Length: 65
Image: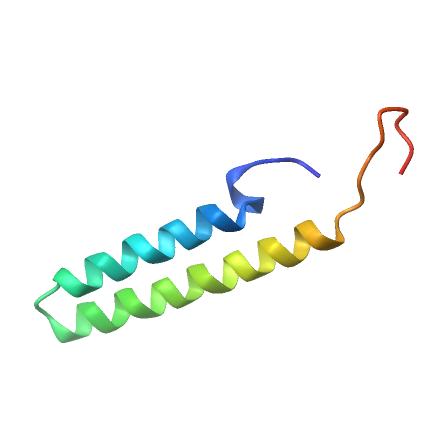
C-alpha cells in the first residue's frame, strides 16, 4: 500500500474537523449547511481509507504477499 495523505484516515478526519470549525464561524445558514455536508463527506472518506488499510495486502521484506 502506498502511504500518502489520501489513504490516511487521520488526514480526512482532520479535514472534517477543520471544516466543522469553519461552519461554526459562518454567519450564513446556507454556507454553514454546505460546510457541514462537506465535513460529512470527509468523514466518509476517512472511513473508506480506514477500510482500505484494513484490507490492503502487506508486503514482507522478501517481497512476498
